[in-house]
Amino acid sequence: MKEQNDNNIKTLEKISAFAKRRGFVFAGSEIYGGFVGSFDYGPYGVELANNIKKVWWEAMVNREVNIVGLDSAIVTNPKVWEASGHVGGFSDPLVECKECNTRSRADHLLEEIEVLADEKMTVEEINQIFDENRQKLVCPKCGQKDFGAVSQFNLLAQTNLGNFKDDWASDPAYLRGETCQGIFINFKNVVDSTRVKVPFGIAQIGKAFRNEIAPRQYIFRKREFEQMEMQMFVEPSKDMEVYKDWKEKRMQYYLDLGFKAENLRWHEHENLVFYAKAAFDIEYKFPFGFKELEGVHARGDYDLSQHQKHSGVSMEYLDPYTNEKYVPHVVETSVGVDRTFLAVLTEFYDEDDLGGDKRVVLRFPKKLAPIKVAVFPLLKNKPALVEKAKEVFALLSEHMRTEFDDNGNVGKRYRRQDEIGTPHCVTVDFETLGEEKPELKDTVTVRDRDTGEQERIAIDDLLEYLR
Ligand code: ATP
Image (tube, rainbow, N blue to C red):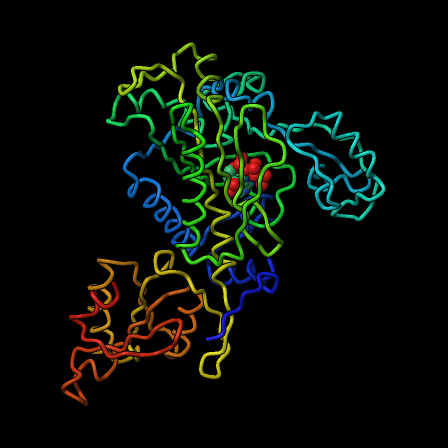
């Protein structure tokens, strides 16, 4: 079995065209000419995204003694975003091309010529660096070098939800820019209503919204995306210990999923924001190079202290073991569903030769495969075969996501399932009916996606075999 391990060969054009053709990802609002930064997940995409969330939840909530889940509102009291610093400071440096009016992120243009402009810099500092490098900076759209001045653009998206005044924009609410604020504002509720004791974590999966200036690179940077975040609340002196643990666990998580170690690496933030104690990102080798997949950060007591200050509600925790009172420190892990989706497609996409036939195959681990098993009647115009295949479908679909397919010859059906990463195909043939060899009655052919090998299995043993 040949394995291809060069993510550069898996170009973004190839992956995105494939994802569209096989019903994983569609451009958002396509029939209206699209909508920048928006994408829709198709029939197999929604299954994959659901599995990504399920696997994360299993690892972060189900298998952890000290972590509980939450599902907080997308639109909150706007004061949440003042307290968190997002209203004042959640912005990216924007620069506009004077030639074609395309807006770009100044820090990303600088990054391309390997000049660092980090989030701590003031707009004056970025302008200075930008001016020093103007000769080398080109518009990604028209190729000209004629930019205006850099300004800060706030990424929070506003909404008039619940505000019926004509001038609602002077008093807006916000679509959340990150899911973790919902966790921080519920810290007290969780402590008061459950058995948890510090150190403990709260995990949440949900949509977040950012007015990204230049959402390029497909589903890597969307304006509406989904985050999977976990905030661990810890005793102030213990945070670096907990941080170290989570750093290890999160990298291991990807290795356990079957990612190759060489496609993952750590990136340390060069300049930490003033409240952070440590910040590393897990970067994945996307088709456009190593980029952030997940952040693992030690945030000190910044978030809870800010909410304590702005709400007037104490965020102190009385430690029942030491009798000490403190505002816990936070260690967080934060990853996007959409970025995981792109990483997973890239990692497990493969092209090979099977028995002289070229094919595309997604080598998904079983947990992630959108369809776990496909059931085929050998021929669709033989009612006895179809009826038996439907019985097998009914048996399996109660336990796992199963697809019934009677379209085209069996070879074609195998290829279709290989392309969406289905680990097994089950074919009901004349031998299943016991017409030729009575000893094979009620057995089916099970074919393996990776090797193409086939085995004869009794229907009664099928579930156990597939599990
Ligand atoms: P970047 O530097 O790429 O803009 P970030 O550092 O702002 O990302 P965080 O605020 O740390 O990202 O968000 C945590 C995670 O949420 C990221 O690691 C990423 O997986 C995901 N994420 C953030 N912004 C987007 C987006 N616009 N589209 C899709 N996923 C995103």
